[in-house]
Length: 100
Image (cartoon, rainbow, N blue to C red; front, side, top):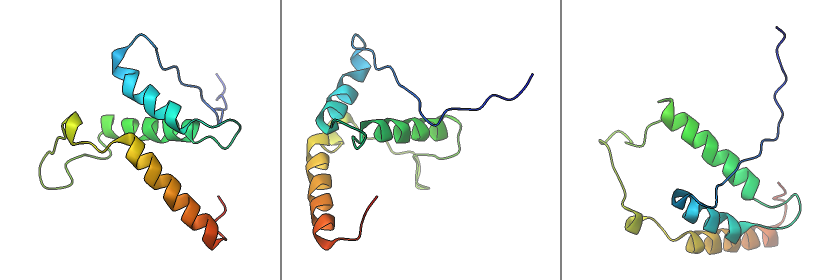
């Protein structure tokens, strides 16, 4: 059996009827742009990588000071994070020389 080449691009299915994905869908809809410059697919890939690293034990969320858990009310608002990200991108664009 030969080795198969893995594609550089994967597609994720985010079920509309699963309430666990409601907030994820909301965040992705907030950052969705048309064309190849949309950060949504990159974000999904990064989150998948983090989930893989967490579930395989390669990284831990404890930070060395014992386990820490955040309640949903303690997490930052994704819309505020998105607004801050856009402000940083606009500031970096004014400086120039920061092409991706």
